[in-house]
Length: 463
Image (cartoon, rainbow, N blue to C red; front, side):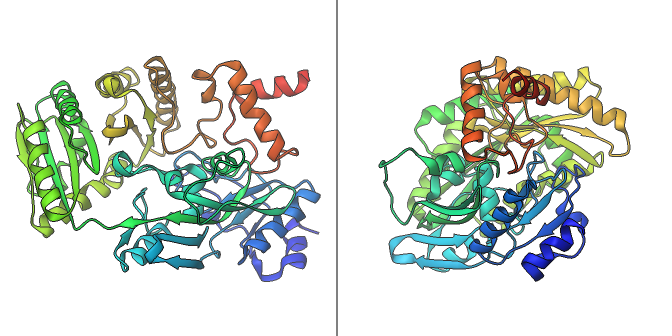
């Protein structure tokens, strides 16, 4: 009897017929495989499936919207446990600035729901209509507005999760402060489904700003742009978002940039201010003053149509970049703010060394840069060179005192890379925490490994 048939006997229509291809990969287009796909409609159902699998030593791979960029939701056998049917908004208290949602609620649904009451949930990772809150929590997803508002985990006040061997556990709740115990909530946030399966979350909200205004400043070189970035930070203005795009990214996106990219531009700082009308307009003017020195051109639109067009261009940039060669290896390294220029220039140098088109753009305010290497999907040789380029990038980030991931996570594609930046004792603790939560190593196995898989096997064999 097949595993799918056994599961159907136990869980009926919660079992998806066959193993549809879209459950077996994510935005990385990494191929996976599974024996069955189960999509329970309740949190209790998630715990029941986990208990059934844990009793039978069957691996379980939790899955949100499939928008991951590190292969964290790509299965290698076992059961895919999809959270797509957990779509209830359990509680919404707009006067208390809080909401409780299930894991399968999409980012867009959440943002639209709270906006109707004059509130915002500020984290804005990509693919808003497809990404799900449970997956955003599992990866501690960020986005452009993390500079002012923080990442997803900063907005979570309570979690409900299914933990091995199959129990629902709640930590935190509709409260703003809690230091009664170890911060299990924070351990689950960003754990990429390796410690537990998030089924619901309490989230805090804030009033929506009256006005949002962007500033786009173009420079002749990356060094000039990074110097301007430092001036912006030192000016005391707090942008809601502060993005950068290098020259190669500008060239790729030039055809769709509203009004066209100015001649001589080789670097772009894209910022956003928000607040009351007076606050946003004053901050926009202060940003123009701080960033405008030596600029090739400055755009500071106030018309709603022009504002929306600028951000539509930015949000669609990833698709434009990927279309250049058909595929792209996009990494998300983080470095100290004073080393941003080194990553921008280092990305270009790594691309030249591996004979690949290389771009660098991302969240300058956080030091979180998306260095991207383009390759043709039909060329295994090009893809291999892109993977080698990523290894060089990770080494660069570690050497600069940074991290190999700021918001995508380690997943499958970057497993073992944590060893570049953590001491052996810290790596040991990382692995011990996994064993405490998941002693059978059945929950998203092979993902978020601190050491390379061979090294992990040697540690286990030794003792």
